[in-house]
Amino acid sequence: MNRIVIFASGSGTNAENLVKFFHNSDNASVIQILTNNPHAKVLDRAKSLKVSALSFNRIAFTKTDDVLNILKASQPDLIVLAGFLWKFPELILKEFPNKVINIHPALLPKYGGKGMYGMNVHKAVVANNEAETGITIHYVNENYDEGAIIFQAKCHVTPSDTGEDVAEKIHELEMEHFPKVIGKLLSE
Image 1 (cartoon, rainbow, N blue to C red):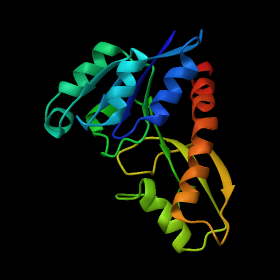
Image 2 (image 1 turned 180 degrees about the vertical axis):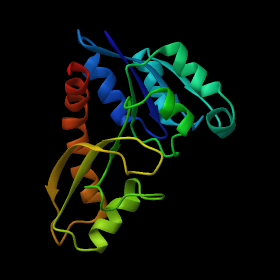
Image 3 (image 1 turned 90 degrees about the vertical axis):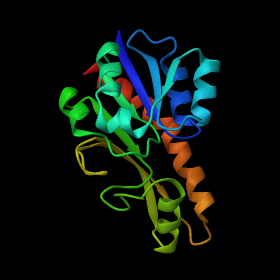
Image 4 (image 1 turned 30 degrees about the vertical axis):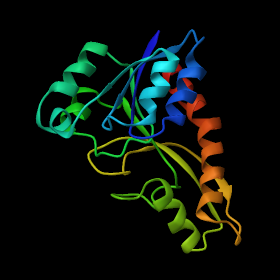
């Protein structure tokens, strides 16, 4: 059974979707959710889904081995960033090579980098009159949104779409594709 650890910073809709998708799976299970936000709704979702969850601060993440040691104890086969906003430390990436993936709400390399997350991305897509956008699932490396691309899915953007409209389209793509791509990755 493959073990998945999720990192999230916000509401946790992707985390919840993944937990539910793999709940009765013979292939994988979400064993833990970690967050850098002690007030994140993902903690409430984890509790209701009966998944172990912990919050940590920047010192535990980047200056000490605390989060690394939690991961070593959990022995994940895959670490999934689902709306996690901090840059991932090289120390953890070296310990878990090619085992950390992220979902980004745009078609990378467009609209990636520091500060490009959530509504910031969707508003930029609308402001630039893009005809399409989408999601990118990629490996995490030492730079924001620059790891090797695993999968992309596209959707159309109409001239009348607002940032909120684009966010809804992206959310639908995330819910549909993220669990399937993870399942496929863990089956290879």
